[in-house]
Image (cartoon, rainbow, N blue to C red; front, side, top):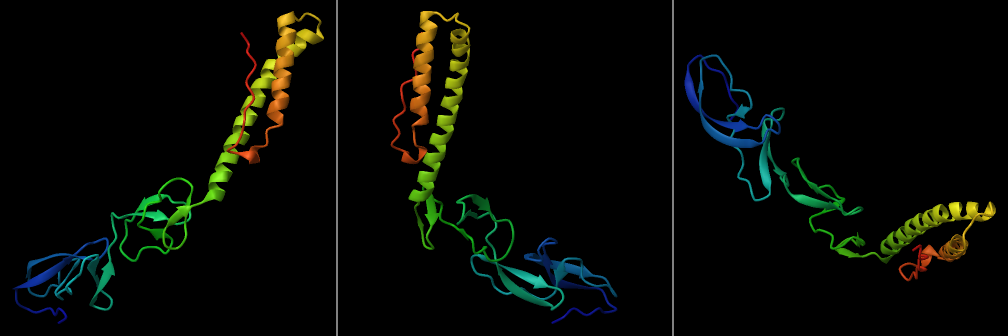
Length: 194
């Protein structure tokens, strides 16, 4: 039944709606003065019975209720990145999320479950070796430069000349490291500078 104004005061059952989503939030008795309409965000049409995981949402244009999936506050995981997010809107879950948390860092979604992703693990290991190698090469260069200056100016002590050779040998051994051999990397020992 659709609401009709009358020229008499009356009390009717109204169904209150959320102003944000038009979902049913409760019912009560509403006093309707003569020649006035319903209060804002309400209807006199009873909502359908809902089932778990759904809410009743009213459409003012059609004057009808529909059942809409409700996953709000549910934590889901992006199937491309594994990143978690919390659902905050009504409706179906996006196609690219699942409710199963990834187990580990190097996994991928195979359509049914998270599986180990050796390629991603190898890429991460290789990247880590590249970064460590670059850092150690920078350190070696910073140690070599002043020692080389001392040798070039013919003012190096025997210890400085020995350290220079040790650091140069270390830098050569570092350069021979192939990051794509990760995780089987044998790092050369750093020269003793004591």
